[in-house]
Image 1 (cartoon, rainbow, N blue to C red):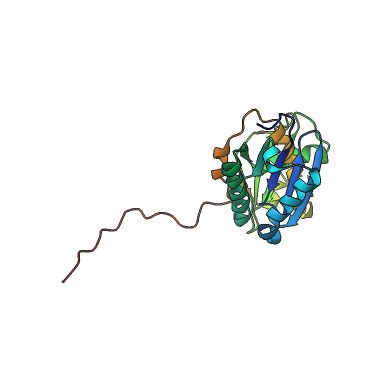
Image 2: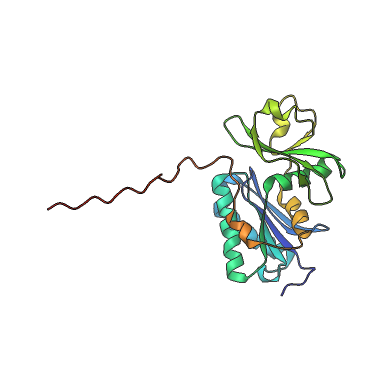
Length: 227
């Protein structure tokens, strides 16, 4: 069994900048960043390089954390599927973390916020909308005060808190924003404070919108054969 002091691996494969980080809440051992469009073909190669740089192996990790969205549909599935495979093959503890919560963690230091302050985490949902959620900062685990909701950029500006998210610094009318370079290091902070790892979260991604297709309301009756 890995040591309690063994490093944690964190992956974010659903954001515009895909990232991997190795370490814990006190020390980052190695970080890799990849463009989203190249992530599916380069993810495992970068994972090997990351472990080699830190001088460790997958079997020695304390656990693996991956972000579960909202984010790129394909990117999320690549990350969640990769971590699920590693969990099943090696028996490592694993967990999927909400992207918006990890964004809030990243915004705490970037925006100079303190415990008790509010922050809005936002992810670009395309079609002129952003998936946004408000958090109150509390240690290394921000607490959600509402549910994720699709909002227009002008609605983000009147939510009354600083906004953190990839690309929010390009929006007009929001006085305090932060756009992180990557999220895997912030995911390490959240994962390091977990009291329990739950691999069941790996099959529960968060998407921007419900699927465009729905199951049929009734099963069609089989047609009788004719001779």
